[in-house]
Length: 191
Ligand code: G4P
Ligand code: NA
Ligand code: NA
Image 1 (tube, protein in one colour):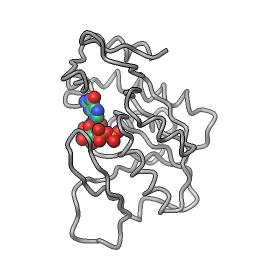
Image 2 (cartoon, protein in one colour):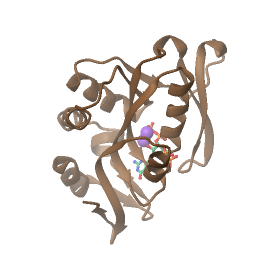
Image 3 (cartoon, helix red, strand yellow):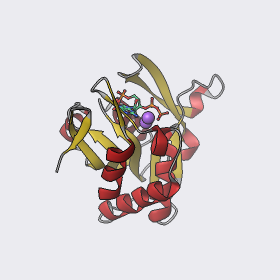
Image 4 (spheres, helix red, strand yellow):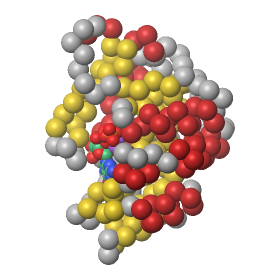
């Protein structure tokens, strides 16, 4: 997605040759027009694919999932929570997710009320790095008896194992910007 790649080049900051900071349009301040266009691009890429529901994870995935939903005809959007809820333990599906950037494991959960067996689910997230978050969401969706339509990612760091991990499991991944490497403090995009 050219608009996104240009915005990354313009506003992205690279930290330690490893992390791309995009706080000024995606992870803290949000550019709604750009995010709505991301939603339209996901709708185009998954147009061949029946989808009943969109699943994401708080917090940065929510705005993107909302935009994708509107572009796809207002599908229900459900986000996994990262904070353990002490109430209602039996009423949620959970998955343990290890965050490489934060070096800690957290439990993601979604209420059983919001995932229905037999539905086709699209996962949306902002970044794909190690793939741990996506694998955790797939686990939750599978527990609920849903099938996975695919995984839509805004920014993929292709030099990390996320995509190959997901493809090895047979899942379709569509990323709006794929970064092959960071060179001289600039992202180099994969064609
Ligand atoms: P994974 O989800 O692919 O396994 O990756 P990892 O554990 O490394 O990522 C943990 C968090 O860091 C995720 O957000 C992920 O989106 C984000 N992340 C990974 N690489 C980058 C990067 O290069 N730049 C930025 N800005 N974020 C990155 P999160 O902690 O779950 O937070 P939230 O923003 O969704 O609340
Ligand atoms: Na994030
Ligand atoms: Na995220």
